Amino acid sequence: MKDPDCISFLQWALPRLQLRWPGYRKVRRQVCKRVDRRIRALGLDGVDAYRARLEADPAEWAVLDDLTRITISRFFRERDAFTYLCEVALPELHKRTAPKPVRIWSAGCAAGEEAYTLAIAARQQSISLRIVATDSDEHQLVRAREARYSAGCLKELPARWRMSAFEQKGDEFVLRDELRADVELLRQDIRRDMPTGPFHLILCRYLTFTYFDARLQHQIAERLLTRIIPNGFIALGKHESWPEDVPGLVEAKPGLRVYRKL
Image (cartoon, rainbow, N blue to C red; front, side, top):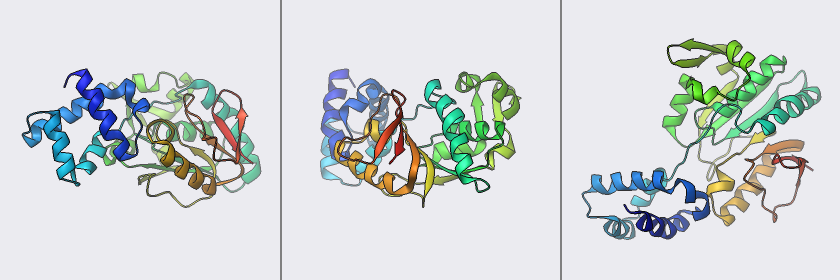
């Protein structure tokens, strides 16, 4: 599929899935390669024929929705934000909740990188926590359960954490069992399901506020607020922002996109 055709198709299709084109601009080729494979699998002539298929077959939209999933994650992604979460937010929450564990939800957890980052940080500080990590993609959850990662995925993790938390097996690094035990992995689509709260910290990074349209962002933001305790934290990606029309949060530290519930 040529790039102009890719852009035209996504600008037509994404809004019908409550997704936003700006979030996909830089990753459009990845999505359109998947769409090309789907077109060939269906034996269709091209993108126009696939568009006609979508208009004629409502069930095909669910297939396309799966093709639009983007997974880009790694340990300690965006160091400043995770340094704040690990060195400020976690100790503060621990003081407020001990001896009970700090409760965390990692939404759109991919292969578990961010959830396990917090599990490692908590162990380093003898902080008790329980993490619920959710994703709609079963393939990603299988990877999270296996907890096997490349060196590149760990490149931003402090060296001492990497040495204590992982066992190297060939070219891969395998997370130790005791750290996996702190994380419960669930298959859920945040557009329809959320785990039962309340939580002290929610990670919702590079999913809702990157790819979903404004109306869906608003709806999910309102529901997220019901899952977080007063004075708890919600962390977004540094290129994301909380919807202005959903009050109830203030930035915990400017520039990090880590918010505190009023």
